[in-house]
Length: 319
Image (cartoon, rainbow, N blue to C red):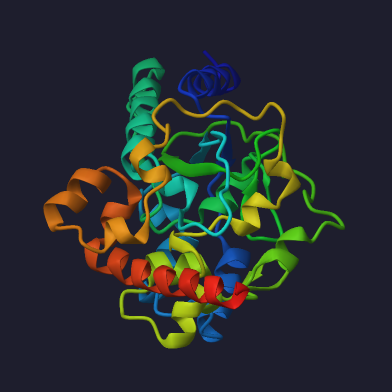
């Protein structure tokens, strides 16, 4: 079988595994992406995410993760389930209402890597990369033709939107690159820029994490300042505002949700009052195997205290 046939079979396997988009890109240096990251760090827009300052050379050169790497297989797994927003109630970002994507995505990509090794005539070296691995995920997804980054800094996949998890497989075999990058998905639309309540999107494609609700409620480890507490609004964990207003996420027939990403019913209407008295065992029973569990109970209770105060202040302001 030639390289083109092999690539086609792998993409078919990805489709059967619920990936809504997949493709290949040749391993090259990531100078443009590295510059953007360095600019963010230099301007301190990364906040207290010190891990972003580490392994910059590895991000720029994927072959340092896998010696001899020649191809990056990139894939997007959708979590496009319908979700009704209830005004003035505590909320959890939709990606955190489901099974931990790290585990699900790593498992599915691992199956594809095993499949590649089974059908290839030679020994194949490969590494599965999911989130915490130092690679430029959106960059490789764009190069592989999966989608294009919008003004809200999220990758937008045609006919699916931005509710996707990205993952990669580094391979030491050459496979033909898939079609070139997708066109600008935003054009004149700037709904996300005007909808961010904290002004975290300071300009198209440029984020100040220090103002981002998702950063504050997920990444920030210390206690909030009074200003940060007020900025979190109604969000117990994460934030979806810049995605909810995006026209690409309001589709009549989006790609079907991966079966593993069905939201846990008990989390859909959870309140700060339910979170604050939780014991560690109760927290584990509720949130184990979800992204929230990684943040820990202490951080979640901090968020719950902030949301309680914010919602109370809102009620008082309406009287």
